[in-house]
Image (tube, rainbow, N blue to C red):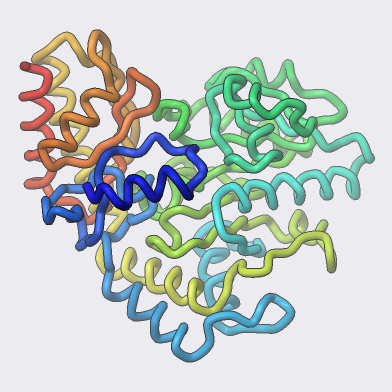
Length: 396
């Protein structure tokens, strides 16, 4: 990589990222090129962001066209693109709902948490503000989203964290019932735990939690920051199970690389917020809203959700065959094109580095899970190259 970039990064950038030694300078669909013009197939997609391919012309043209007219005016004023996008997201997720925009998944989750607390205070009591979340969950790196995250090792460096959360085992409905008390306002879950190691929720678990929330006037909050926007074979992962959440959060793939996040809430919940309760300077600006609308158009026009399911099934099948051929793969988990492979007796981090040297970009969660989050435009031939390289790696 460019040594000057490496040295200046070390000097000027706060070191919170354990970066791979490569400088990417160009992208196109599922491909990336580094500063030495080496070509790679991307199975990370900017951490599940570039869902419809790098430098997507439809999205970029929409952004640039709007930016050349009006890029930002703040939320003190009306803009049509924002209203268009709000309507589109509501109709696609919670048809009787309302939408609020921020700039990231953490912001979307922070907003959802604030709204849930406000709802509890208005409709029940000042103490009804606690939210139950799952162990291994990941909801963001801002202080409140971090407190919601069910990973104690991530909490330790930043104690004391804001209170108001209980963490219970995932896929354990009994643990949720046991943790609920008069202070509980809602339950916040990922349909598939992404940063926790790609663990899908059981259908019975999700349906039981939904019924429990409805019967006990608790809010069902679903974090679809990583699973949303076609990643699992539906626009939102909760739609596989016919769930009816009170609040849904989304981000990552919504802008296909342009920063935007949102939460959508049922109208009776959304109305708990009034003027001044929440805000965002940049959230849902005209240009990024145009990009998000173009992203949703592209997904619909090209049957991307169906493609995600088919390519995900294909990748899952080949990984299963690879598992049957060696003893290193313990389990394959996921749905659509969000797949994690748990391994043993090998270092996931070393595999990531070795695959990068073979022109394949993947990432790892800890030292025993390899994760695949490719652009949803990936093809069978790209997947075949990945499996061949993994087979060679494990054979070696």
